[in-house]
Structure formats: C-alpha cells, structure tokens
Length: 519
Image 1 (cartoon, rainbow, N blue to C red):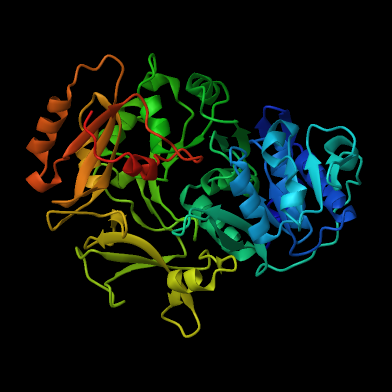
Image 2: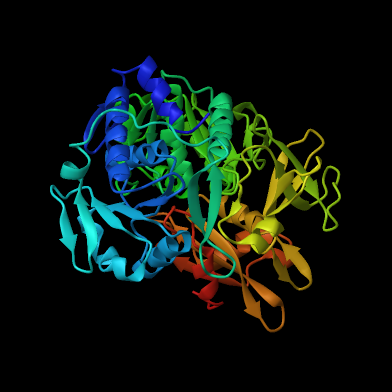
C-alpha cells in the first residue's frame, strides 16, 4: 500500500464527509481527492517525475495537504519545510536533496527571493496566492495556483511506484550543525500510521484537532492518520491563541487532541477551564518530550474522562512506544511499551541485550524504521546496524533507556544529553521533574554547562507562573530537599519564556550556549 491510497480509499467510502476543516473552509474527502489530482497534473505538466523531490513551504492549510497527496500521486517525494525556516537553511535543504520545485506563498517571498540562482536543481515555483503565472527575475518560472492547479483535470494520473519507494524526506538537526534528511518510504509511513491508529482506536467518527505544524512529523501524521480512517481533521495554523483552540475543541466536539509539553504548560495556566467543558474529548496524545508527573496529575483533573497517551518517538521511525492510559497513574514516568508490530530492546556498549533495570541504548525493530539518511552513508551506518535476521537493519536510537520487569520503558536521556558532574552522571529529566513539582513553575529545562572544576555544572532555567512569589533560593532549597547534592543546580536562571524550536520543543542548545551565569 502507498500513502496516497489513504485518501483514495476514504474518498470512495466517504466522498461527502468533511475530511479537513481549515482557515480556508471545510473540504470533503471527494474535494480533497480532486484537488490532489489537480496538483499532480499541474506538477506533471511541468515535468515532475517519479522520484523527484518537491518542497512544500507553507503554513498549515488545505493547499499544503493537497500538495502532499499530489506529489505522492506522481510517485515523487515531498518535503515539508517549516515556513519559519531561514533562507540559508532553506537553500541548504533544497540543494542537499536537489529539489525540482518549491510550493509556497508570496508572504514568504523574502526568504526564497532569488532562490533559483542559489539552487540549480530548482525548475519552478508554485505560489498558492498567485492567480496567474509569470517569469521571475533569474528565469525561474513561477506558477500561480489558480491558473496552474485549479484549471487542471480532476482525473487521477496513472499510478507509479511501489511501497519501497521514498515518500518523504524529513530534515532534522544533525550532529555536524547541518540538517540531515531522514528518508521514509511508503512502507515506513503506512506501517507507522497503521500501528498508531490501531492503539488509539481511531475511526471515522473521530474529530481530531491539531495545531501542530505539518513540518513536524507529529503534526503531519495527524492529517495522514485522520484521512486514513475517514476521520475529520480540524487543522489550525498554530497554538498562538490557545483560547481559540480551546473554544474550538468544545464547539466542534473534538475527540482527539495531540499536544506537546509546552502546550500543556500554557493550557494549565488558562483561567475558567473546568472538567465539564470537555465531554467529547476521547483522547489526548503527548510526545516530543515527556510530561512532568505534576502536569499529568493536573491534566487528569481537568480531563477526567479523556484517555491520555504518553508516547515516545523518533523522526527516524516515527513512533516507538506508548503508555496505555490505564497505566498512567501506576507508571507516570514510563513511555510505555512498543507500539503494535514493533520490537524494542536495550543494549550495552558492546551491543549485547541487557536485562531489566539496566541502562543502555534503545534499539527499534520494525518496518517503520527509516531507509536511512539522505546521501549520508556514514551516519546511516551508525544508526542502522545488523538486526536479528541476516540482512536486516535495526535502528540504534542514540537514547538511553531502562526497562522494568514487565517490559515498560523509561527514558533516561540522550547519550549526549547526560550531564557528567563531579564524576557522577545526571539525567536532566530527573532534575526537571523535581522543578515541575513546584506549582509556581510552568516551564523548566536543565542543561550542562562547562565548568573548570566540575567538568560540567548543572544549570536550570525556569519560567514562573503569573503572580508567583518564589525566589531563586526557594527553588534551590526545594531541589536540595528532593535531589542528591551533586544533582542540585549550581546555576538557576529565571526567564519570562524559554526559547523554542520550530516544532515547539524547548531549545536546550540555546540555553547551553547561555553559559552559567546566575539570575
């Protein structure tokens, strides 16, 4: 099966059901299907062929969604690039994969202005707000969406490709400072989507509200999985206005709500939210980072009838594990067991499997494991290594875990995230959990900073709730009460907000660069 068949099958089963509700309006499965065919035919007319890479540089929108399916229908490969990406990084990504086309909006023109001269492989642009086509300076053809796409035939182009072909390349941070492209085949993506919708028990009755960017694979899969099962997806541009999101959750009677910890921190600070307002919400999911136990407790109070799924995943395989909601109170710090049709195990530095309670690197086995990093054989060979069956490759996650006697996983930290201070190893997650136990702290991050005496010193950066009367000494005394002495932060910085990446994660790289100054 190929990813675009999610839409084809749902359009046959439920042609008149609303598939997508976005800022542009409400669109049925049949309408999304027809628009995707038009995108495919427009791209085909311009010479896009099987295996070509097409970049989608758009905000969450119907045009972004139909572009994904249009590209796939030609057997081509799509890249979702966050429209907040800076020009130099965009140029690097397009050159790295030798993209042939860029689909975007004129409001991002400052970023991609003159891109044709910097990216030799790029043959044309498609601008969703442009009515007619024109020739841009530098001889890069620029097509207007209305003329180039909406005027095309509704007929589906002949199917090309197989499930072993690439479907997408997802660019993620690399150890060298340059982003690297994670190659995902149709088989990888179909396997992941099938497994996740299975344990979430998704059906056509679901209404999924997502404010996550489509350039974040967690956000992208909300749309893919919704279309796969015939659900309705409420696609929001961002979480910038949380009150609007909450009101829409209630008004639209949403049944599914994917979140990340930073969204939870904002949600829990909102006034006037009561448990009786979310009667339709069947489940919430969390990934990107573990929820602090204190936030889990508050969520359960606010959403008593909602199943809360704590999950763990990697771009290189989409999803690894989930914690069944009935285990949340029993094992609040666990990220659960392997998702359906996946095997996980933990190995030591010699590559041997270890038993319960022993910390080691997590290894993931399954058809959702990436094909590799785009044109990076050395990094691919480091991440993908021989598995139990001859010729098989499994994913070495680079993350440290331990497993209990019943097979539940517990995240310890990145192999390069562990802080070594005074000869001891400290997991930032453990210190952060203690910080979050203070009700007045809404966000916290712990990093290691260079220290001539300690090797690395522990630095904590926190955000206080509005009206909080905590002092720096209050926080440090709290840490001293709950942590071993070598785990108590040497530096504590109080900020109004923490820096975030484009996907909403706290940017620890920026915090580490800040050094060890006290507040």
